[in-house]
Length: 143
Image 1 (cartoon, one colour):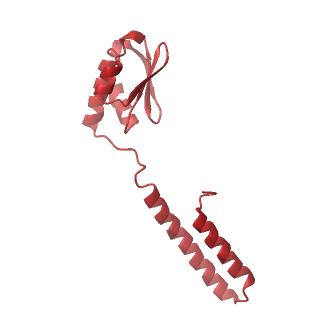
Image 2 (tube, one colour):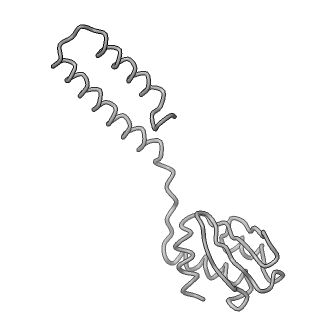
């Protein structure tokens, strides 16, 4: 897509521009044709975006699910005494930990984390499927 338009919208825009420019039609008919084209583009794009992105939303979690996941992750990290700092991004919870060895990847995956990434000696990231902010909020309540 280029400038938010798919190929069919570009073809329709070019055809309508050629019709309006080169055919000897009256001005009121050109105005009506332009209004019809605008309506077609508007509703076509609205329909296209609703169907294209209908499954792209992040799955939401209930508060009980996010609290259960947060407590499981907290246990997998070695408890709240092992956590120095907590942050999050779109798909991950990011932790700074005291003891790198006390992080249990198998327990984190069993709790519901999709994966564990260890970018540094005192850092750990948990990949979360779903609403990361809800899990982060539940985790902050437990700390």
